[in-house]
Length: 117
Ligand code: DGP
Image 1: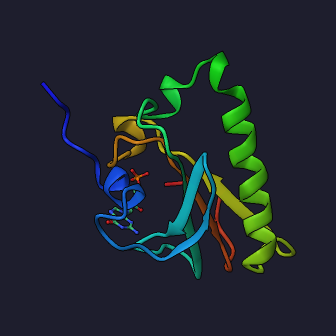
Image 2: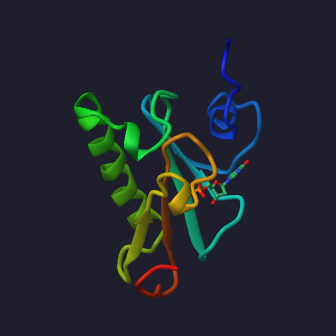
């Protein structure tokens, strides 16, 4: 049985539109459809193997490192690096993950509180 594509895989395959801010062979970054801050971008690997952070294995170290380098560059390009930003990966039910494709939220442009809700 073939698993149904997630919404993120459909964005990767350009089947549905997204405001893409960065793309390379390994990852894609686009504006979140429901922004929680003035800047809210999602960075996702193109592989569909990783449904969440919990699926990441030692073989993925280079990919995850690459994604974080991209996140840092995007934070600078999007003008949120100077005042600070937050990177979030919701993993599983307790963290309210809704899309089963590993993703990192890059949010900034306002102050955040801690602890998170
Ligand atoms: P999470 O709760 O961590 O699984 O976050 C999923 C995020 O994905 C959520 O902030 C909304 C965003 N999202 C869901 N569907 C779409 C879509 O079709 N387009 C875009 N750009 N973002 C989406």
